Length: 385
Image (tube, rainbow, N blue to C red):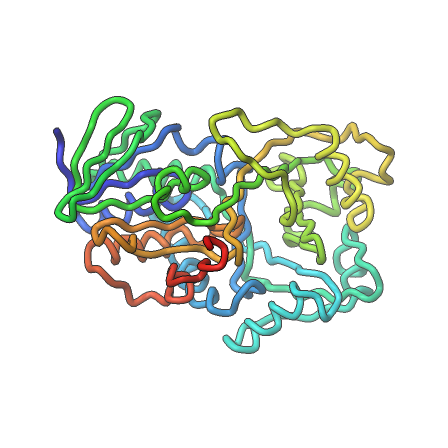
């Protein structure tokens, strides 16, 4: 039975970069995944992810986002590929909305440079965007988008070069810890590690079942459209955009491959991950098209109950916590087991810094990075009682 310093369960968004970070620190690491990331069966599906620092969800994310931005820029140089493109992001809503008030709070507390635009100014500067008159816009010019597929693919490739052993298409059947080591049973074989890191995404409940954490998994649909007025959606002519209150969002027409849109809120509950996730339906697409027709009408034109400008659509999975904040911590009953889960649809941008956190915890038992607000520490006692 092979033995390692650290084993990682799950090599998607967080696991891939954790494998890279541990390999950089010259420890023996094995990573396991039931699929072959990057893929379209989990939480990193959808080609691109938003990067932003002015965090409406909680101002304590800002230092982590700043650190992650530096790491993304460094990885782009190392991989000789642009992973983070700083296209800007414009968030729109009523002044009292959670989106706008939250961004203002984070910006004020951390001295972030955010430009305020009226609805009239938005419509004048960005012809595709048609917010209601009572909306304001907050423009974060250093925000942008991350190439999700390239990031995971290149991260795993570099981890292998640095000595990580990565085993794909090999489901983990279970693990057990006796304090001194962890035994991991997989579909193909078994292994031993001194430390275990669990980054299993939507399957975190299966790997952390003894904790009874209140994760829920939601199916989200994203779609790409060939814009009716393509010049309005060209890169450089429009930032990433988001509208309160349902957080309907969209990207520029990146590489001419279509304008990606989605809704951050909502989504169907997934109760059994052993069953195939239902593909996008006409009902799913109607919801997106209706939202787009109201605020970005030059994307698809007036909604007629169908749209022939659809290029493609797919699903991804959100693993939600009740408070929609991540959980990153040491297992409360196993001192050599650590986990990061419940990223609630806004975790990808943090992958390089979460990797640093997990490597610190596994190798040093602590981290200087500011994650205390994300630790478990009884956050969900009411949910579990």
